[in-house]
Every structure is written in structure tokens, then in C-alpha cells.
Length: 364
Image (cartoon, rainbow, N blue to C red; front, side):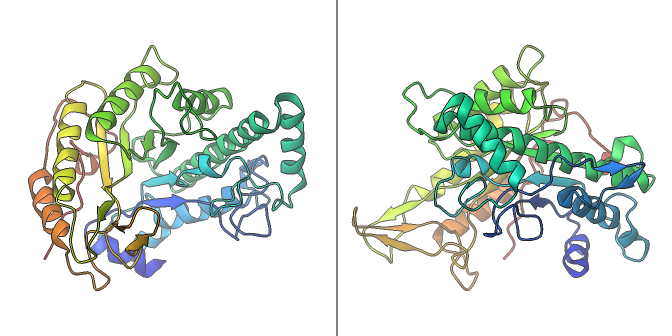
């Protein structure tokens, strides 16, 4: 980890960290379930509590790599890690489906407190609703633990309040209006955000992130609707910066050697979304992440049902740009330094403040 953090630092990048399920903290034998012992205190008598694996791990991590961390005493340049994001799309594993998420699968869980929690909620609300509500209660606690631990570490390192790390909480991937419940088992945005508030997590994340896999019009209306209605003085939670932490376009072609001509257009449409949303004072999109970059992560595949080849990346397996990669390069050059001064509140030192939208610069 030292080498990775140092590599980012030498590139002038404060490495963001995403915290998801894993064997080191899992409440199941599968290694992918939500962390165990989340309801243990983060600290006891001023000392980090070893019984809370997420609290202990995040505290030690932030104490080393965060503001005023031990790592920076012997390494330069000083580019501490200041962003920690909760795991991606936890809502999709909430109902115990037998899929790759598995955050809340009762057949896998071997931590008795959580098994009892599921039984309790199911008895009160039925199987479907009970699983959703019980998971949101435990997930909210994971956000509280993560944010508390990283901030306690920074304070113990002597970092001033204005430079404490921030937590980005995944809030939902679905559109704000879905009266026909097209997405069935997924949560509605208001339902998810209300749960975060009701379970005490509303003040424990400073960035709200989501995944806008929609047409450009739907993406824009979803962002504006969500920000205005759910994160505002009149909404469920106070306004805060917004991250589109995963956006993309899946190309469908009949020929494996061809590329969807609409793909470059999708990249430029995202720039229009950013401009329009950030024209609303107080509701900034602080970061937009394009997904996915390389074929090594998500390879092309043939869909026998439709007869189409599905392509998801902008670079091939050798990290050479595909035709959409050149569009991304042009888009990144256009948006680099995009500025919306006066719309985004400085969160830390001036050199760390993100004015407008941070864009990963494409280099040849």
C-alpha cells in the first residue's frame, strides 16, 4: 500500500479509497457480506476498539495515510488521502439474491446478530420489505463507523477540523421517479436517503454519490430532482457536493470489429449534464467518473439473445485507445480546468479545493 499511495502522490493525486466488504471484516463465510460487529463502539475510553473491524481498519489506515499521517513523515510530496467512499451499489445485494453482491444473504451470514436482525424485521414487515429495512439499518451504521473512524484518526494526528477527511456515501442508482417500480427489489432514492437519515447516518457523509446509467435527459433531471428535493434546506438532508461516481455507455454492434457511432457523443453529453446541473447555485456535481476504461477489466462479450456484441471499455486489453478513447481524450481536454467559481464551497485548504469538476486527464 505504501508503494501505491506514493505512486499517486508523485502524480499529484490524492488517492480516493472505496471501502467495501471483504474477508478481513465479513460477517459471512463468503467474504463478501457486510462487515461484522458494526454496532460495537468505534472507541472505548479514548482508544480504538479492536472488536469493530471496520472502525479499527479505517482508523489505522487514515492514521497512516490521512492528513498529518505517519506515512508523510518520511515521504513526499505530501498528498494525504482525504476521500473515503462507501461500497458500490450495496442496494443490489440487500435482498439476499444469489448474485455477486451478497452483502446481505442470510444463507451466507454466520454473524448471529445480523441473522436475528433479519428475522426480526421480516416478522414485522414481511420478507421483501423486512430484508430491505434491516439491510439499510446495518448499512447506515457502516457509514457512521467509517466516517467516525477516519475523522478520529485525523484528529488524533493533530489535523485541524477544516482538513478532516470526507466520506462519500453511495445513495442509490435508480431514477427519482419510478411509479411503476420498474426496478422492483431496488430502493427508491427517497426511501434510501430517508433510511440514512432515520438511522443516524445523515450527518456522517459529506458527499453524495450515485450511478447515472440513463439517457442524458433522464440523468440531468434525476440529478436536479434529487439535489433539490432530498439534499436542500427543505429536503431530507442538507445540501452537499454530488459525485457521479460511475457513468458510462454500453456499445451494441453487430460486427465485433465496429464501434457504436453514438459512443463519442455520450461522452460529450456528460459535459452538458455537468454544465447544466452546476448552473444551479448550491447543487454542484464535484466529480464525474467514466466507466469503464480498459478491456482488461470488462471484456467485450456476445449476447446470443440479441445478436449484438456488447462493448464497455474505451481502451483495449493492451491499454491502447479504441475509437471512443480518442473521444474521451478530447472530452477530458475540454473539461480540464472547467470552473464554476462561486458555486462550490471550499472544503479544505485552497490548493485542495475542487472548483467545478475534477476530470482524469487523458495522456498519450
